[in-house]
Image 1 (cartoon, rainbow, N blue to C red):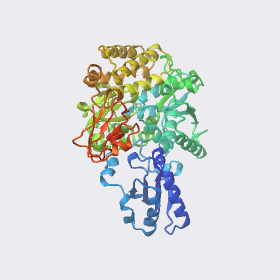
Image 2: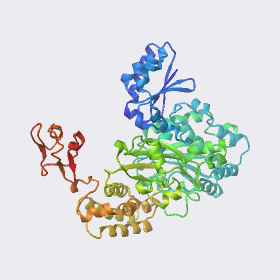
Image 3: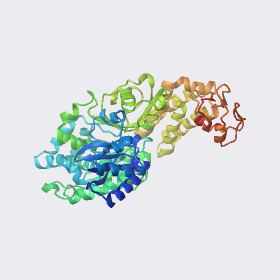
Image 4: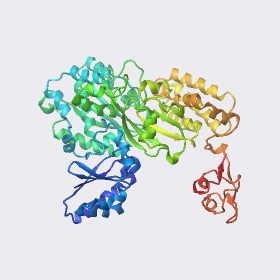
Length: 586
């Protein structure tokens, strides 16, 4: 039997390393069954980590969840006695298993299944067959691009631009020296799709990039990945070395006339470097700031040579498309948005993690059917799509179809795939301030509209959540939003106002309550709320007083307690620990 420990970043953070070490110790000491302990990466079920899968050959026989190092002995006994009932208490439930059963996986097809440090496991699942197909069957550059065109694959990095169009433009540009670049500078709060692909299936990125390099005529490929992804970098470095040793990278690949080398550039983590021209500036050793367009990278990119840039998820689809045909990919999705899309489902959700679905499903299906609904069964309030460049979609639009056109009509964007779920306790004004604070701090400062405009907007939002908002503030925000959208140099600056605009559009009454009533309807803005105790519910257990860091709660046991408003720091500890629901927040 094969014992597979999930060691993506989420699994390791939850303690998978300790589980692996204990299993290694037990099976190394005595292993009558001849079982093997190995690793994989994130399967997408981040809410169940650490995860250990038991395989009999290629068949998954048990998925164990929330595993601790104390469970290692139980797993050892179950495997060597061939009595899997010993691990029934840590086996995944049918309800949680449905999280994966409702997905269609292409970009994530190998994640959580293969060992990302093993090229042989990738090859065993059809890896590098697409590359062999184009190099050994006489497919021309145009044949490859036409197949991608037929698939309808759009860039999964945010803008949703035609991949085939970009490849064709780079191929047709004059010059022998061309570059193919992967944008793995994933900077949106709550987004981790690209990291998961590199950590879990680095060879699918390499193969997709090689096919793209062949199509445009590039002899060098570069992966620009943020330095905050150390595990992804280690696994990608290993994959590049193995692919080079096996003849999939380097000179005269697979005996053909096609040669391509690949290297990694670790970025310093500037959000603006997610914009393709700022990324190119950083690659050249300059400060990451956007260039004026045109010319576009396809004509003048890295070192002013023709270059193509796509993100990790886009390249992760390419090998599948070439192997299975563009029509197979185009058969999924909607008329204008083909194939599947990966989302990082986070926030106030029961089952958070990585989700890959065909375009055309609704937000409700993802959040409730796959994600299991809102944590603690609270009311759904909004979902933020597209990160700081996106917008908040309210409950009234929960049945919106997931494709580029439908999401764009709401004022949000698909973005790279961050999907942050919010419940009734989330203040939408505070959420708009949070995303704008991120954007203002990450502005490169090159253009006045973004550098100054976002700061002025942030000042206004700061006053509103502090109870110092004034009549006319909403109109000032709208004016600033429109000026920034029209005047910012790059796409990141132009979309920075989106969270504020969608908040005004869908949650204006909540913003007005902050301004005119000095009240936060969600009970989240610290300066606009007060804590008190409902004496009819308080049983005098004193738990709230014991947990109050400011000693603001007093009373006698078995009698109602009281909160001193002058001492209260509004930390919320009392509400968290009260089992009677006696804490009132207004």
